[in-house]
Image 1: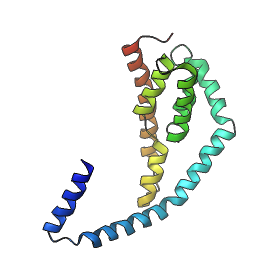
Image 2 (image 1 turned 45 degrees about the horizontal axis):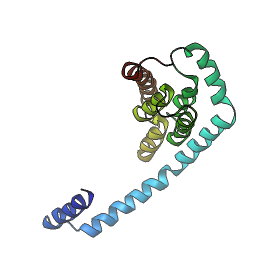
Image 3 (image 1 turned 60 degrees about the vertical axis):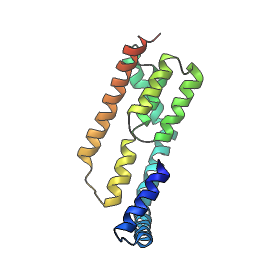
Image 4 (image 1 turned 120 degrees about the vertical axis):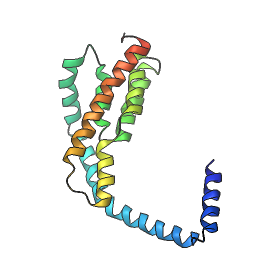
Length: 168
């Protein structure tokens, strides 16, 4: 489908007398300028993620939260839930660890997979999209994004519970 879409787009543009190559080059130039504009935002976020993980803050927060929800939510999945809004790759690392430790057919493995698919990297999205257009005030978008990640994680637990039964 992709080659058909690409060729169809080029033919449609040519039929409408759009300078296809020049338009492509202009778009590529604009894309490069956008990439250069968001690099400082991405570097800052990568440093923040590394500090969050290496400082022990992730483990400390996980330990605090695990005490409250241990009967409902497996503690092995909590680091993934906390890291998912910040870093997709970081949360994927924790998901793979859960799958290796407990297996893909375990309750924790199913939950980790469901959370990975149903939540988003909120801070990354805000950094890239808002940074590319120069938006500085992100407080409502951040609050709504993080709340939706929390609701998605809880809904994932409910969905896995309903489909596969309670943990254990």
